[in-house]
Each structure stands twice: as C-alpha cells, then as structure tokens.
Amino acid sequence: MYREFDRLIAVTNRHLCQRPFLEQLERVCRYQPKAVILREKDLTEDAYLSLAKTALAICREHGVPCVLHTFSDAARVLEHPYLHLPLASLQKEGGKPEGIEILGTSIHSVEEAVDAERLDADYLTAGHIYATDCKAGLPPRGLDFLAEVCQAVSIPVYGIGGVCIGSGQLDEMLDCGASGACVMSGMMRL
Image 1: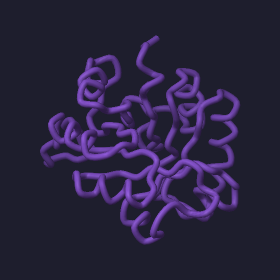
Image 2: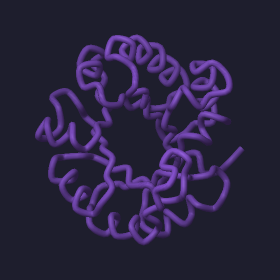
Image 3: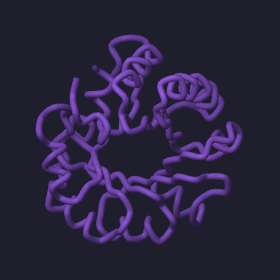
Image 4: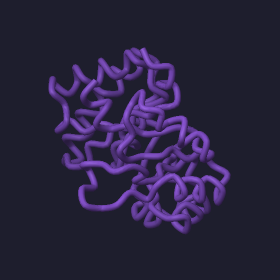
C-alpha cells in the first residue's frame, strides 16, 4: 500500500488499538515494516513475557524483526537478541546487556545521542519530531534537532513523534539524515 513501510518501525501501544491487540499486530506485520518494537512497558514483567512469546511468533511468521522493550530479563529468558531500552536503563546497565545483538534506545538531546552511542547502542529513536497527542502540550523538537542528532552520531537514527504514514514526513526525516521513522498511533490504528 505505502512504499515507505520498509523505512518505518512500528511501535506498539495496545491501548490505542480499535481491535484486539494481537489481531492488530498481525495486521501491522502484513504491511512488512522494518521492525516492530513491542513497547508495552506498563505491563508487569510476567505479563510482558507472556505477551512477548505470542508477539514474537506473529512477527516471525511474517518475517518482521521484533524488538523487545524495557524488560532485559524477558529478552534473556526468551533468548531474544533484539532489545530497546530507555536511556536511563542503558546507562544503568553500562552498555549492551549480554546476549543482545541489536540494542536501541530513545534520546531527546544531542548529548544523550552521543552518550547512547558510547554505551554501544546500535540505533536511536529521536524525538519527538512533530506535534503528537502522546506528548500533548510539549512543543516538538523538530527537524533541525533530528538533523543535529544524525550529524552527531554514526549509528542509525529514527525520528519518532507525530509521524503520519503517507504524509511526506518520512521524506523530510530522511533528508535530515535519518534512517527512517517510528510510528505508534498510525500503526495501532491501521
């Protein structure tokens, strides 16, 4: 449907879905995004682990990489090598946890981006770039911020926040040096 899905990372939020979450995840995977970040960080670790088992199976079935979020122990238990940590958690870990091949983190400043790269992050999500209901009342950091982050690090950077599928925003972010974009609301409401 949209040519850009190979540059988009779907970020989950089951609270935004209009259909059952696992049905929505299946739908998202059929569009073949670059990856899915299973972000359900409000769950307990046990509940997240249970959900992750099913989500990983759905993503595998469609050949879409699934990145676990926040719960390092769940990644260890599942022997899953893709993990996205909040920057504070990455700083606490002191670098890439054992057994993790691909590690991402979220940043909100150029300084954080540089620190995340030093701590062995493989990619960054930088935001929020556009106005978004998820950050209501907070002005977006914008494209100039994204360009500064991309220039400051040598690892892939994905813009996040207020990204609308098919809007031309992806091209704007690519022009800033980003490798792609992360989309939450648009993916959870496809």
